[in-house]
Length: 141
Image 1 (cartoon, rainbow, N blue to C red):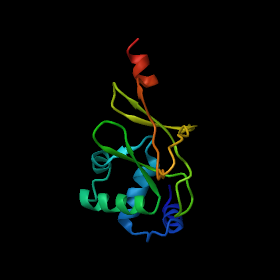
Image 2: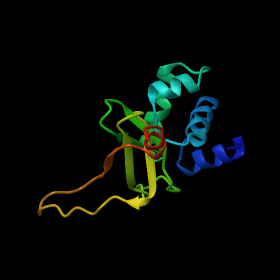
Image 3: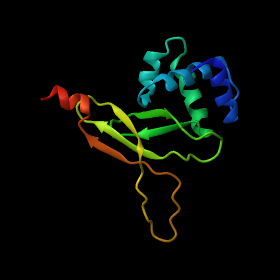
C-alpha cells in the first residue's frame, strides 16, 4: 500500500496520518492474516510496542481495524473492509489452526446471525472456527 493510499484511508476514518500510523497501517495491509501485537512488534522494528499499541487502539476506536479473540490468549488485529468511520460492515468468520496456531480470515463466510431474547442489544459478533488449515493438513499426510 502506497503512502498516498494510507493517508487517504486514515483520513477516511478521521485519523490524522502520522508517520507511525502509516507504518502500522502498512504492516497490517501487507499481512495475509490477522496479527498479534507481538507479531507486529517483530514486523515493525522502528516503533516501540507502546506506539504500535496506541495506533491499534486509535484504529479500533475509528473502525479501521477489528480485534479478534481466537482462543490463543492474544488479540489479533486486521484491517476492516468498511470505508468510513461508522460501524463495521464486514463481519466474517475466522479460522484458527490448532496445529500452526495461525488465524485466517474467511472473508466470504459471513458470521451467522444469532437471535437474542428481547432486551438484549448486540454490539458486535465474532465467529471462530477451529481445526487444521490446508497447509498443515497437507504436511500431516
